Length: 110
Image (tube, rainbow, N blue to C red):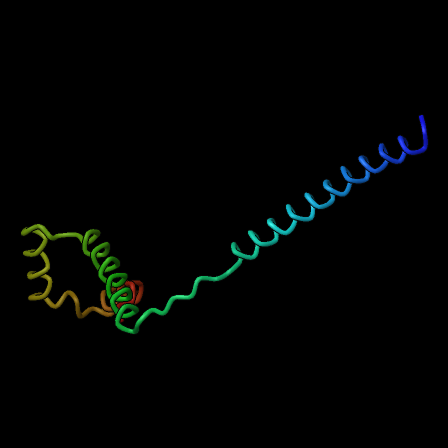
């Protein structure tokens, strides 16, 4: 093989390597660009009214859940409570302590 033919082969190989390096460089730039776009934060301004509405909806959902868990009293149980009130049952120190402890365990309502 003549020297000119060898140079032509080498030139072809050099061009191929050069194209591969350029391709890698372009792919790297594309990846970097995509990564930058993915990392950009989206800015939004939420009005005070929207924040208040959101807070109200969260509170409403919480209260709805509490009401759903509330127990109802049967008429017989109401009558028993009336009798205890008439007989001053709830004025006993032990009963008062029990009631206060139960009230303290209730979820706070703001």
